[in-house]
Amino acid sequence: MIDALLRQYPRALVWAFGDSPTMADELAALVIEGCKTASCCALDALSDEGQPVVGGFNIILDGQARPVCVTRTIALHTVPFDDVSAELAYKEGEGDRTLAHWQREHRAFFEREGCFSAQMLLLFEEFECIDIMPSH
Image (cartoon, rainbow, N blue to C red; front, side, top):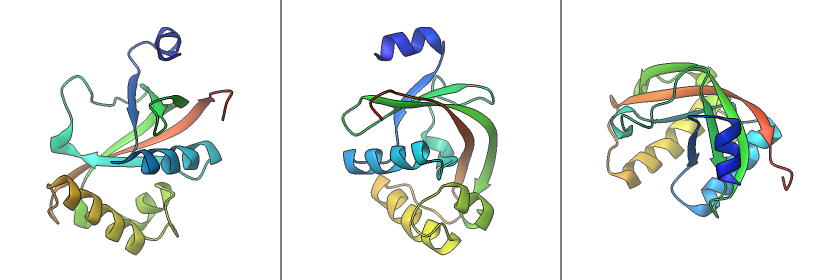
């Protein structure tokens, strides 16, 4: 199925959210529901081949590495962790969608990854869900 999607969406990035199968499932479901329209990662964690571009496609995987949807990047922002706005936190669609929740959960995530710093640069990606796989 991924091969067919890559033919339909050439040069799409293929990835799952988070750092566990459970988190991948939960966050992908938020995209499908329309609650999650943004995500972020540590800027230093991006590889040269895996950088999103405005207009580019993402094939989002669930916790079992199955494609669940396709998104199209509509905006990119580079922001220090401590400067993330309530608006960007809300667009991530997680928890109660407040900045306090976003800060708590993302600090814990980046600490698990071993890269947290209050001034670390994040790449925020805003996206729209353009295709949902039939099983979802």
